[in-house]
Length: 283
Ligand code: AMP
Image 1 (cartoon, rainbow, N blue to C red):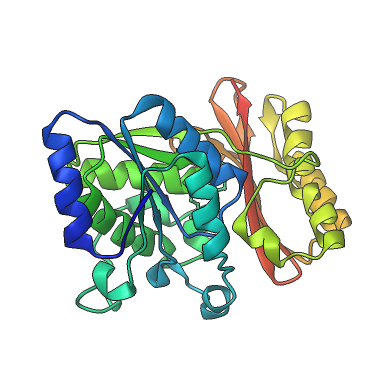
Image 2: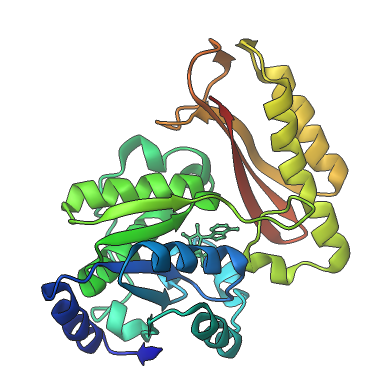
């Protein structure tokens, strides 16, 4: 496994590989790697010639400075896991390689409706930061295939929009969410939970499963109330949203016609750790 810190060095190396017909698979991460991340690496290894993983905790996507300061870092273990998983290249840039002109950037991506709802609503500026880092990384790595986790459902849609806005010649593969046996979605932020909190945090997924089991055509408000109660009863201190939305557009749905493809999404705080999850309900 080769480790690069310099953007132009890795770019040069990979453009030679692309020129010789090799498909480059790319897995962007913020480190503190777990089986979910490694699942993306495995998918890339199965379908591409070279797998590149980046580890970069992107300062511009944190709307909460406390969350950025406390973001877990386990670099030695990350490199060990990547090597073991057969990752070919790791890109580990310092902030100046990604943002040579500084991290104060204008909100220049026209994401429209997508950044006004759900995560966009509760984390203002977050998706502009995601686009800034992914735009820069795609420009450096120039992958043929980009691997993303369904765990970050709205982020997948935002990145697809970025790719179409900037006309990057890259395809995306969305990999299903890896979970603990309890149902809790694997997340780097789980490292900040106590064992009791981790157990309780499975309540978020349980509420989404409840929605999947109970959803029927008609008004959804009282069902959503019941789902929120499952989250609160599990021990979450606050809920940002538990929502049902059109799976293709993310438009929130208050009354279901029984036809529109549906996804359930949730975001809630276990102590001061904010967790998100989602589940496809229909079809
Ligand atoms: P992160 O390091 O949290 O920025 O995540 C890097 C990539 O891994 C993103 O595409 C995430 O959606 C994906 N990912 C994170 N957690 C999981 C999970 N539990 N299952 C599958 N993919 C995940």
